[in-house]
Image (cartoon, rainbow, N blue to C red):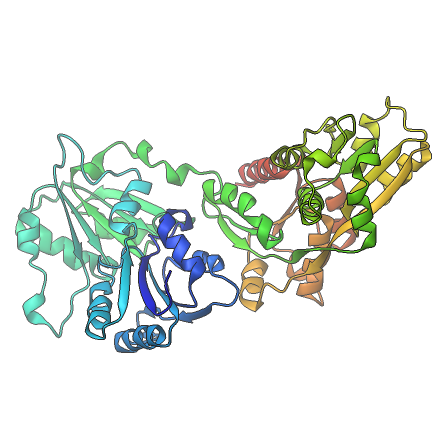
Length: 504
């Protein structure tokens, strides 16, 4: 992305996974991001830490910036030599006023680019299992805004013509006028018995949909309590088998889940949860800070002297091999006959990515599991390197020493308190679930919440990755509602899904 350039980026309809690769790329490079109210919040963490984020959103009766102010800010930012992104919900050129912004940029002689996005006109019906075209039912579709501008009489929508148009009719921004739209379409000749549907908050964890006939759609929508933002679909395709509504069958749909992992690690868990329909609140309460020093350098320089190499986390693998690389070494520095122990499959996978195969992966992903797995391995007099976090539990090293091993314990990194900001912390306090992947995340969250933390967090169900983390939660005054059988991310997700199913 060039300095002094504006890129109009379509964020998609709400699911953060639906932004394009190009859109995510330029968002991560921007100096200044002007973002909409809807469909952009979950993408803001993609922005680099030094980027200026400006709310340019509009809501009924509330406008953060007028369109003229937005246009001026885009031009000003580019002329100041900044890389500017205008992040817009859906597609910039589908009822997004992106055309007006492009006109303003062109008139000002500012270099700009447009990155299309997925419009809710297509995505919301798709997530509800309604194809806007279907052989034998609809060979065309029409997209129209339901928002009338009373000051521009000449531009009023011709509902009679739309009623006669073949195929599927998709109406955006029409929820507040759904009764009047129904009446206009019926007056224009659309049959009252034609299938119709409404999809609220399409592609997000708040998605809900109603299927009806055009004649009774407004009443069915009102009875279900659906409101804006929503997409209205009128046409025979809305009468297809409701079982095609795949997204609303996701087991965590409508559940808000807090992920307390470090920012760099949160994505894997967050993506799994979003894929199951959850509304994910990323609340990174810790950050991983690699350590440096003579003890680590000595271990790296003499790593071939060890008979056993024990790594207890993905972070440990990364810190150790990054430091080896900084000293001009790689996986070949590890002796071929060294027994390599990884505390779980994720750690073993990261080791494999670094070119080292784990010889031992215990069934229990705990210090006690490692000791049990090594029960038949002679350790007396053997040199062992345990490379892990500074705050790690002492049981592993104590157990190895008790069996006669000569253990060097090296603290590769610290876990530091991360301040996620008051807005995300408020979101966490109102969530359905809190997930904890390490005892450090429990302690840091309690510190951040402050006085009365257990009672302030009591409205959320707690899911823990394993017994050590569960013990830390209980020590902090939290009830633990579910604990993973497998002490890894898939196990944590399975435990959460099972709990959600059991509690309805």
